[in-house]
Image 1 (cartoon, rainbow, N blue to C red):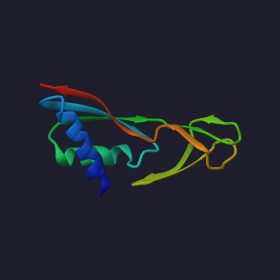
Image 2 (image 1 turned 90 degrees about the horizontal axis):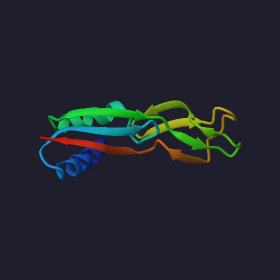
Image 3 (image 1 turned 90 degrees about the vertical axis):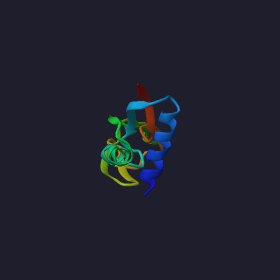
Image 4 (image 1 turned 120 degrees about the vertical axis):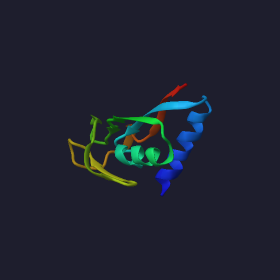
Length: 107
């Protein structure tokens, strides 16, 4: 249900720019929602053109690895991932856990 809340926040922010025709949204592959779920939520609430761009995550692990994690599963509100080097859970997510409104195209 929180996908609707996230989508409504994005819609409100986009409407601040005028009569919206299209939005571009970045969805990190460790975000609370998979990119497709974000797109579906937006389509249910608007008739805008929706462009979703997936962004690879970057993590930092206690073993010294810094880079993309191995994603084992990503579902609604759950991302299970590990360090590709040591197979442990990385100690820090550097990027790729956000949903960001990147561009608003208006009439």
